[in-house]
Length: 451
Image (cartoon, rainbow, N blue to C red; front, side, top):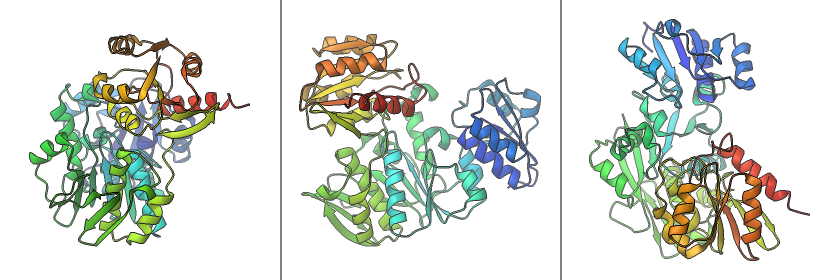
């Protein structure tokens, strides 16, 4: 760290910000945490226990923030926020919690980004490494913050899920293994509604990589490939996809997933992979390549892939009631996630869509809807766009504004042998606190039907 840095201000007091504040305090810096919203009791108590100054539930105290030598910014705060623009004008460095934590550890960093599949791939790879006896922990958007772990619970390997927002303020951080799963439209309001800027943000995961590192990516994703072509990447490239090419590190060979890296050449039946669907095949390929590259023996990877349990709120089986299967896919907050969910459906489907629309183009899922969906239930405060789309394409649609009404419509429409799929395509904030709250309330309501 720069010897001229003494005063650090952390903006945002969630998991990321609180962890960064504790690490900064432990390293001897003067720290202030500032959050315009109310801090959750858990994080407020952590700050008090560690004697860290903080303010919350009020506008940032500008004179204190702008007196900082370094600002650590929560990923949820846009780069266009007034306090951020003023800090930039003063020349105050602004970094992410991940960037800050990386300056105090020599641990191996395995970093995962993409518009879809990040959490599943992160937890799957962590599961594989732990199954093989490695000292690995999850960080980023899952688990405890990287900064908190570096300070209080260090590990040899971190498997780090990274959003584009986190990558935006990373400069010197280096991923030993970088994984890019895909790039589909999401969060474009933060990137001037320009897909190229969003894609470039994702490719920051390769920043500072050297020939000793590796970059794992989906070779059949056109946006990823176009962005890679214009990005200087110094790492070993290990692409994956259904079709084999000369460069492929993973591909589908008949009914077997095949993995080939300089460390090992092996395969396993696709049917033995516990998480199903084409999207989860890609996630499994990426995790298997990374684990193989890290020296995990194929037999450990096969075992871990076969006994891994799906991530909560991602194609999570809730219950079978009166012959109808209920699936919680609340984490599907964009069209691409719902596309993959529908791809994996094997039964006639009642689809719950709706929430806070992020500029969705529902035609991207139209083909799968025609093949698999017989009824749509719109659940949100404003369902005009979904209702109009469904009527235009001839889908029966129920316009509902509460979870209870949505499930009542599902129960009326579903027949024995059907699936009711909550895969909303939208953010949750119109009716729920988060996608987790939406998923948990959906599960509780469904289970209340069980006699």
